[in-house]
Image (tube, rainbow, N blue to C red; front, side):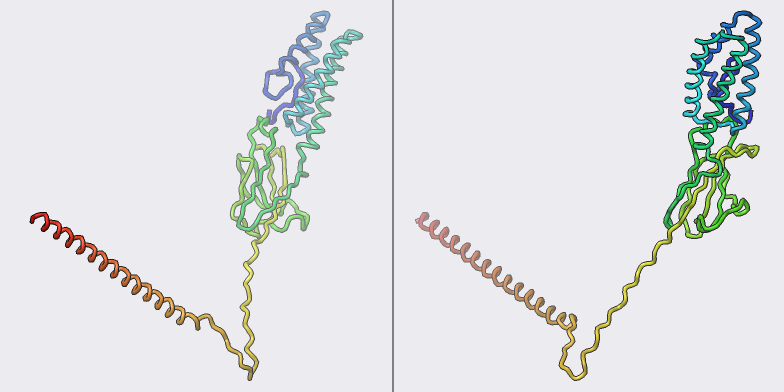
Length: 303
């Protein structure tokens, strides 16, 4: 199979991770259903009905892109279980094979109903548009991944394309788009953006045979960085002719200020030198006095 088979509501089908019949409770329901047939011939007929219903379910899913998300799968399973329990309680009111056809057809309609909702609201082919804003020199991340993409069995790839120009200014045709990149990753990062790189970017999730499962459009606008504003030089008007106006210049005070600081520094140095000299003289006088006293005392002791 090229795509995942959606919610095949049958027993006797090989198990897969994304099919409803893989659920243990559903398998038990079908086993009870087959065994409840009154004769072996009826069981054989129900088996044939199951086989044919599997084909109809597969066709229903393939007609609707063949993809589904986990939430939709859960809703289909829950509703079908409810309908099937109701059917088991009221069966045998008529032909067993006719009742089997009715309940399996009911399952196909449940599948069809939920797939239509999913395709309209979740798949959004050619309708999903997201505005993306960035600044010149910055970056923009374009990501078109959705959780149900993991359910695809076919080998897929993300194809990014680009139509330059201000987004939304004109109607674009397929020929306006240029191929950008083909990758297994769901997102691309545009770095060091320029204004001329803005435009309409498109991401398509495709199979190798060209099947488009999902498509999303990004409307990228790049805002230019404003130039720094140059402040005008202000020129003072000249004083009127004939008036005694003095023009003050801060540089005129620089020389007197330096001279005053130098004089104060020299005065401080001289004062400090004088004070230190006096302190040294006093210290020497004190030492000589102590020395003289000590000598007189030694002389008296000797006498």
